[in-house]
Length: 251
Length: 343
Image (cartoon, rainbow over the protein chains, first blue to last red):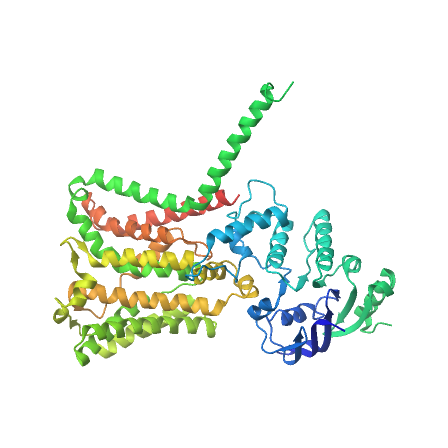
């Protein structure tokens, strides 16, 4: 099987709390994996390890079959792992273009910021991918004036611009309106069609079920079960998740 | 009826154009509002002083005096703006001014070379600043507390080493270094003013056209977001402190050479003026927002008030009251503008 990401026996402890038991987790090429589980199940810890934000205590991480040592945020982004966080990771008082290029600013050959290019690219992204049509929004607009959906759009477009191979969506539907949520789910299908991979984390099983190829259920820091969405109905999946949350076992 | 003949459509089109123009204006105001505001404050104060004391404020001498004294705190206020944008504060710089000059004096005694002494002075400032950064970032101590502590510590080192005795810098007078640092260009413009302009441009470029500056804004705005997006938040914060240290040592040696003497109290009295200049210039105490132009203008407002107050015929006792008034009013103006422009 062709895996874009493979994690073996990865675990993480914060002080007294074992946030993640040693788990195995894979994402195949061009697969959308839904990651579900209750609060504190370890979802966020797992993806923050994948994005290089946390260093795992044990285990190995392979990306495109190659073992990755000491993954950092910068290294992960270079590999094409692009997170879209639930807190959306925006700087509210800064302009749109600064947010799009946050942490990966374009520079000229002299080593100075290429502000003009970043503004132009932002303008292009706004027109082509974000659906901002109002003249009131420009690359120099300050992000805090945006709606929740628009902010989500900024975070997603950031991932698109940098040609991510594996896009990680952490609770992307939180705080979105109905139509914004639908747009987001379309976007996930778009990722699949473009041949890329995606990890989709959400509380809402309905959202995950409609777009994911495979669903991984986390519970108390361990993988409680995995299902291909084509093999399981939404009802029985919800049934199992409820039981896991209550008893810690799927059946 | 075609749209060309329809007066209602013509009116609505005109309104659209007007709205677009208004939009553009609002965008411009949002982007430069704070800077325009602070420049207006400077012009008003300047105007009041010219009207109140024309003999003083229309003469060359007063401007020569401003250009020789304002740089000593402006040089520090410029990089301090970065610290405050990054969401931190630094109260240690007055002591770094004294430490830098102390090292200058000691190295000069040992080597006899003003050039070597100058380099050691700058390195000292940079390292003390960096140490402040390390204490704040690595030990996780709030910068307000940490730099109150280091401010006392380094002043203490100066007092212990010197025993409270000042040192003469007269031997340096007339050297090339002296001319470059505090000489007078054309017999009128103090070299320290040119250094201030140079540093202002340099810090502007760093803040607005370099990755480091971009990361300073992001760090101050939302530290967690910046970290998630791969910004090296720790290094950015430490570096801002190091730059203030470097600037403080530089300013300290300029101030000492200007009077040909190293006083162990060097730097005392600059703390409030420097901080006030930065806040006056529209830099947010909450981080994430601030401009170099604002700080630059803020320094000149603070620097003119003292002389201006006396020149218009008020006693020196009025100075502090007027400082306070202008600072509170300006900061209130920034807050009001900010709220309106954010909408």
